Image 1 (cartoon, rainbow, N blue to C red):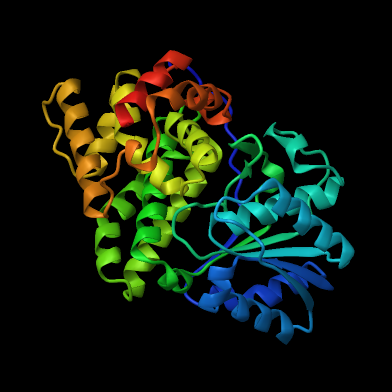
Image 2 (cartoon, one colour; image 1 turned 30 degrees about the vertical axis):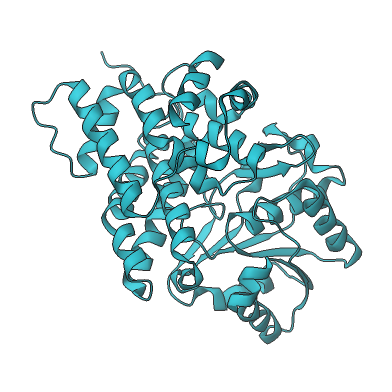
Length: 386
């Protein structure tokens, strides 16, 4: 008799996908009875014109708004707290974020603080949120972080030089307006960073100990879409059809990892990004093949499916060969989108590894990694990525 699989839940926002969907933000804010909206973004997204589209849509519905753009590329505790104070002082009742993972994570943090009236640092960890956040509408302008569909918030604590995670279904937004047109303002480096991030989301979600029949189809489709289209999208930045495929892949990867959670690449990447204030996708790119090689033997059948999804012919190959072909493919894919770098290039030395490893071991993503890891294991993998 086969074992009954464990219970699984699946959370997702209401998703509106397609070119031009950003223009309907006013309608969705109106359905929440919004009187004054806090719009969270950053200077780059504002310069690209996407904030203007959002404000115009709110104006058409006669909804007042307050703009907050003081968000760093890795959003910080102080920025969340200042945004929450602006939300409160302006008597806002709905939050809209337009931007990449940073404004979206900052907006989620602002909602938590606005609801509880306490410091964002107090909510680190899993299921710590007790009061529902204000209605949240997210509009991603990068194809990769999937903050717009996930139950994760990643905030940077600059005083400790570390990032911390908040994981709760309470931070899944109410509405996600996924508009591929907004990604035309990404430069090739950002396209590569966020694309690699999405690919790693899909791989880690598929081999995670929390994976299952609800998440697997999303993870596999994300791998197929991103592996098959990212290089071409970076080469043809104006092609909206390619952007739509990558945006769809990113969304599918987000639905997978939000529910299956992630693994050691992300645990190590969060630690690294907090320590050096580096782009998250770049951290993932530096680590991914080393973690895959480390994890392979813990889930060989799953990794074989990953390899096949990438178009690698695995027929009749022993696991060791599948592993080396998969690692080679990941390295080649990284190079094709412009990533050559090692951690050493970004100033990481072997003396930093104990600190990084200690923090990676405290990250919730390490709990669902397919191979049980000790701090020593994590130190070895960081060492290989130097």
